[in-house]
Amino acid sequence: MRPEAAAGPWDFADAAVGSPLVVVTVGTDHHRFDRLVTWVEHWFAEWVDEVRVVAQTGTARPSDSFPTQPYLAPAELEGAVTAATAVVSHGGPATIMGVRKLGILPIVVPRDPARDEHVDDHQQRFGRWLAARGEVALATTEAELHGRLDAALADPSAFRLADGGVDPRAEAVERFGVLIDELLAGRR
Image 1 (cartoon, rainbow, N blue to C red):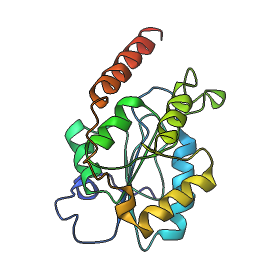
Image 2: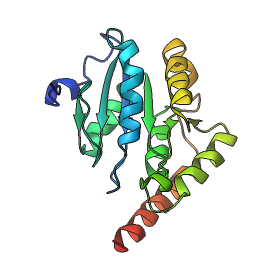
Image 3: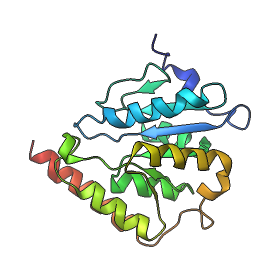
């Protein structure tokens, strides 16, 4: 039975109390990203009694293991990210920079166009570029994702940004991401 995604799981006012929270976001692209939901479910099966997981799933299938919402208002997503121990994100530039702006080092799983998860490989290229600079924790395999999540639970401070995520390039990259998304949406 699918857990309810009502206000309860998304109310993080009492985030200091309770188990660690993992927030997953697949973004808003119309391509499905079921692979990410499945990978997180597999990891969560080992942690079900110790960790909370919530996910913004877009057009991906909802999880049977943890609460999901297809889309969240920006303030809801920001509240979830702020309360999170770890954030798993698709490779969209705007999402990555938004998470970083909130002081979190995102665990990034880029969408794969070979799996019909996106129109091209820009998320993969962008993810590798950021990972080479230490700006994301890149996970391109299920084992890498599980390892990154385990590391985040073992040492949450390693996934916090000392500078609060403020990067002078962030606004430009975020705007670029929005423009690319708008351009691609126009090609549908």
